Structures are given as C-alpha cells and as structure tokens.
Length: 385
Image (cartoon, rainbow, N blue to C red; front, side):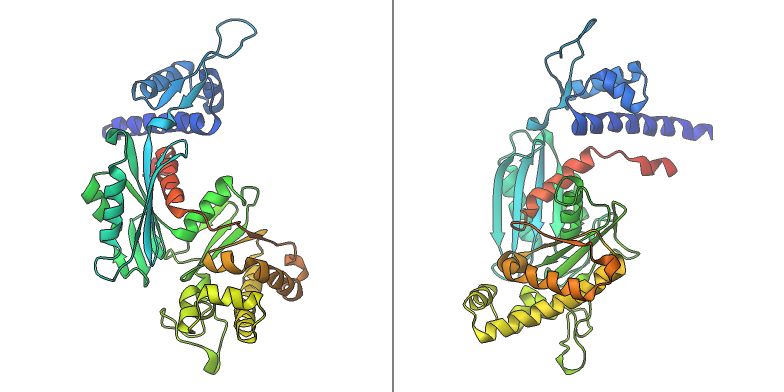
C-alpha cells in the first residue's frame, strides 16, 4: 500500500490542477478566492496551482477587479490565443483540416479532395496536417490533433472499427498519427462529435435526452441519455442508417451485409445507386417533376418510418437532423416528417421537437474542439485504477 502512495499523491495533484484549469476555462475570468470556494481546495493549494499555470503560460492575470475593501481580486483567464489545436475531418470524398487557437479562432484551413483510392485517406490526412503545421505560430504550443471520422470509432483505443467509405477496418489511426507527429491524437465518430458539441454549448444544451441524425454519404446517429453519450457495448449504438425500412423484393442489399437498410434509400450513396444526384433531386422536387417527387416521397416515407419507431422506443426530447441531404431538402422534408411523427408516435412521445441546423457544421473545427476539451478534462476515472 505504501509503495502506491507517491503515485496516488501525484495523480491527486494532477486532478486538482485540472479542476482549477477547467474552472478557469469555463468560468473565467475568475479569482483565486472563487476558485477555492468552488473547488474546496485551500488557498495555498490554489496559489501553488495558479503559479504553475502562470509559469507554463497557460493562464493570464487580468487587471485587478473593483473591491469594496482590502486587496483587489485578480481575475484569471486562459491564455487561449497562444495555444493551438489541429482538427481534421475525414470524410468519404475529402479530408479537411483546421488550425485553431484556444479562443476558437481559425488560423488556417485546408481541404484535400480525393483523387483516387490510392493512399486515401491516410496520406491525405498527413498532407493536410503537414500543411497546417506550416502555419502554427509556435509548435511548442500545439496541444494535439483531433479527428472526426465518418465511420465506427473506438475513441478509447484510438481505432477506426469500420468505415466502408474510407476502407478502414480495425485501423489504429491514433497510433499512426502519434508516431508521425509526436502529439496527442483524439478520434471520434463524426455524429458523436457533433452531438457532444451541440449538447455542450449548442442547440441541444438544454436537452438531457436527444438523438442526432446525420444524412450524408452514409447515415449515422448519436444517442444521448441523461446528458451522457450512449455508445453501446461495441461502440455502434445509434447506427440509424441500418434501421430496416424495406422487406421483400424492394429491400436492397446494404454494405453491412443485410437488406432493407435506410442507408440504401436516404443517403448520398443510396441516391447514387439509384442514379440520382442530390442537386438534381432538389431542383426536381422544387419544380414538381413527377419522377423527383416520387423519389422524394420514397425517401421521406423511409425516414419517417424509421424516425417514428426510434422516437417511440427512446422517447427523446429532441431530434437534431443534419447532413448534406438535410441541408438541401430540409424545407420540403421537415414538414413531412413532423406530420408523420404526429400521426404515428404514441401520445406520450408527441412532445418531441425536431431541430434542423442552418447548415452542417465544419467538422474540422469540432475536431479541434475535441483537443481543447480533452486538454481541460478532469481525469476522475483514473482514481479507480
């Protein structure tokens, strides 16, 4: 027991520092007295921690605040303008990267479009990161690389479990990038990452139980229950694209090996399979072309069926819809889905609210935010180790 004590003390010291650091990040400007009140740590402990953070140029002291008497409190803030993160969005047809500072200012952006299957996407990721590194003002202040992945991801292990569009299966992407750059690397599924961002400070911030659905090249989903992301036993919870919406002869075979999946109908890849381009479908629907109208109705019926069943089963407060297909067709699609839900879900579930973002977010910026969030994370789970 005695042999473990130094390690435990070191871990506790690290946790206390992260608690203070995160509070300065989330609640700053904040004084040392307020930090002591909110953390329960002694004034001396707070002073020691703050002095280390000041010495490491992570925290700045602002001008003293007004005081009714005695010594004026000195507000503390994060020195976000001189710390940096790289975010990379790895999509089926492009890799997009953003260099961000910790005040969420974008310093540089790069997009590498897929020109063929050879070397995609790893060489494209490396090419994007290499270009962004040229624009980092101080490499010693670069805190990590975050990746948003279109596919199934085990974020704890840093592996891409399966992404048919990217050609990855059980691929150790985090290890490959950490070996290449010597920086901490974080991975997350693109829809899970969007759900985390929107639940933290976006359209779902007031919601405790919600679903995020992305209709893009494929279809992905994320489930939040009691404000916690539900990833499932094998990190595949929320795979909304594989909800079965067709049977019999109309059920097309999906890349997952099954038939009748929503992805085969209501995704960009599903449209291409049916010889449709998204832009052509959108213009055809708005010009009331019969063939386009029939295709749109098929898509809306399939989404409506799947969505009604998922709402009935999970009883969320909100459902957030995003992705390229929603961006292009939301004006036509949203009223149809609301009508379908109103007819098909039980009375107890009809309070659900459908939300559509103005445009699918730049996920490379969200991926950089993953680095920032982990930099300020409090590693409480290590206490049980």
